[in-house]
Length: 286
Image: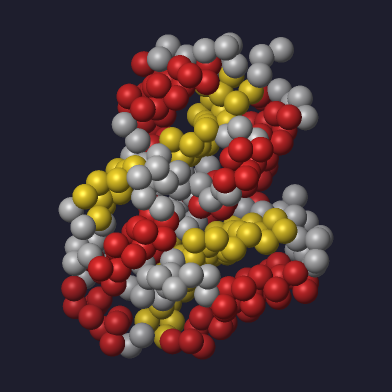
């Protein structure tokens, strides 16, 4: 029986300990900030990126991994006859998943490499990588793992609160006039990604809107507390972990102490588009 290895990209929210424990291979995306390009997680840390983004006049740019880098990763992982499950951030956010498919074809390893569009990113993508790695450790087949991933994708939730619209405006997602009005009115946005599609779920003003968002998420976790094993809370901040999110994590633990909660800064890929002070809660039921 061939070994099954897991490949993902640097937007996935995984701790160094998880990457090492499950031997997950990370292919870095690139980020350009302040006129200089870095390999995400290799040449720049998440905190360093946020600091530079905060100082930059222009919106940072992100780039998918080169085909060559993906080909090299695939060749390395399959050299011993192993099969590979590659899990990548949603196609709507990046061309990485298509680049991975092209790389498998170039490497002539399409029979050994199984590419999955996570339909999400961050900890949701990380959850899929972890599930695949754990399943592989248990001796499950590629087909069994892929079937498991599809079931998880159907129940995954990503709820993101965009607090500062500056990056959204710079990225052209709002017109210049509506963007100025949004800032003056302290408009905040809730984003979701049902079925791999990014959508604005709600818009509102100020802290009351944010508090209502938090409560909706907690209510959903409460309703599914026996079906949720892990929750990810990811954020963008120049001042370290926001106390508000540590308090939020504790509220989840109060609902069910058996739920594992990871609070960690998000990748430059997500921070670029979400903007300063954004945060997301990610989980799935099973």
